[in-house]
Length: 537
Image (cartoon, rainbow, N blue to C red; front, top):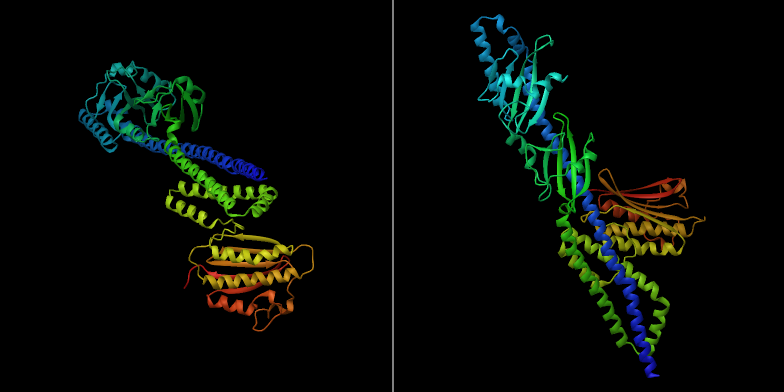
């Protein structure tokens, strides 16, 4: 008999441990893994969205610079003074011609000085005159034989942007030059008088985007229509075949691609002025690397907590098994066999909630609050019965206790609440008395009312600069003849004790705290509304 009892104890212990592992430990670790994966996906989407916003802002900044350069060049190239001077140049006396020469060179110097992105600027006329603000190695005859000369004259637009890697396009001996060419036409826009060529300061221009970093090593650079990097040399050079699929896009495109077994996030934004693209490149892993490390640390901590909780349960079971008598143990085994599933589900739900709260505190970088919460859970071991989201435990407890009987009477209860601030414009214990007695009155009325559907509604919300507490019951409707007297001293429609304090005393408590109470009756029932100002006067 003794051997059988010992054997049964061992079997029961093993069975309980297996159930605990199945219903608590496995779900805990599964939940940690799911939350970890979900969080990483959310962070990934947020980081890609941030990258998108960064590219857009960089593009807008770059576009402003491009527009500023174009305006500086266009304003002079289309000015009537320049066009008329070039058109009538050989009809003027030499002294006036010299005045025009001085005027043009002065304006070129002003443009270069006023716009820091223009390093040099040249004006070449069709009658083979050249003006410049400095030393420019450009031959007039070579220019007229250049690819740029042909393109600007074949182009219906008066302006052309280009980047010359070798200097062959301009037939010059300058390499890696970025420039804008603008036609200078006669006053009637019938024929071309000359060309304005502005050379862009590469260092200043590329600083508009190369100094902007995406994560640790991500970068932004510009590629031309042939998908070749221009102006600056990138660390991450995306193969052309990877870009061809998204090259036709007219707006911002963000894709994830694989380059040499590593995933990258790339963004492509067209720059219409010089038929190029602003491109952003960053390793995908780098976008959420720091978050991933932090989450792994949190998961380790949560796993340790889960194991501690599991061991704590085992210790409790062991202590109970040692303290109770054999007779009580037999009853306890019977109880476990009948109620085990329900209790384990409760444990599972409770520990899941605690772990998620602790994880949230850790992700908010509040470890002290997490440890404090864990200590409270260990000491109190309370299950949350009702979540009103009021934020004041005393008030939540009072409401829960008061409405508990209502469920026994078949009353449907609805609670809608916003979270209240820690400092209320009303004495907390007066507020508890007010709400408890309004709820008691409503429950009593509903309990004794006729009808199949009985509903109690408790609402806490803000309205303008006031906090409003509303207690409503759908039946019975308060008669018209007593509505005006319901808050009078000594008035009562019934003297049952279950109703709580009279409404006169409730009103006195409301007035004492600087609020006011009113009754509204409509087709939905009786609504007692208590108003308190947001801040004390």
